Length: 358
Ligand SMILES: *Cc1c(COP(=O)(O)O)cnc(C)c1O
Image (cartoon, rainbow, N blue to C red; front, side, top):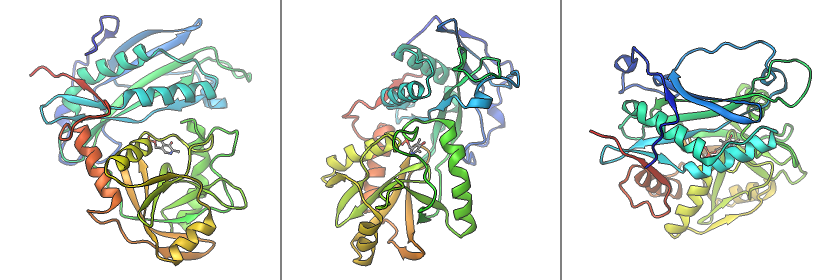
């Protein structure tokens, strides 16, 4: 249990909770009552406080708007069987947040500040944690350069904010993707392994072009002649080839997904063989031709796992069976859901339980 007296809390005088139709929450529109804010100034994070969610005002010169020092996280809290709230893998998200901040030359914060802030915010807005099947409270911690000045420099001031919102199952029909052989999302030595806003901005145009061609997403490659597959849109990618779960190895051009890591751990528990290794377009195409590619899917916090139904390689379209309920993707996904909601034992200490007084 984490408690804190150091966080100033200004509660909303008018909760918006009663306006929410929890049977139709969708994904990404509804925001909970409060937000957490901290300022970095004079070399330290301070003024950690919670206030009603609302607009903030900034000068148009703040450095984030011009030079892009912005990083974020995306994590989920779940309603457990017993009515408490369980926050998933906070340490792994924290470690990645720190790595992203460091890569963007931004100041890190202590684990204590990160955890205290989240736990206090979730406790205050606990009524916003939905309990429907596949539902969660999505948390969006982010930080950006807030120094007011337009000359290029590393900002000396930052803001850290966390807001949250209830989300339903992220339903997507199985995706049609193409191996992107012109644009790259991330290069070796670049920022691909940092969860920074610019990576998303840069990925939109190729994704938009792919949509115009009738695809839902692109499969990013490393840009080498081998076209080694890296990610699927904004998710990590996994293939089941001849019964083995194959995913590209982490590098500085692949985002170290918490869901990816959880899937690999749970595959092991379920006796599914895994390989983290490069897979190039030639191998992928040959597996498709030989019909040994049994499943393909993306993993990420929002959707957990999203099936891929077809892959286009240099203009040739190959279809893939949609993963069945007893397939690799769904077996792992179901176990993961059970662990997060307390229906299966939390062997790996992934859950931070926030006790809710009834
Ligand atoms: C956030 C993200 C993922 C998924 O990471 P999770 O921790 O599983 O949500 C994968 N790829 C990219 C590019 C991302 O930004």
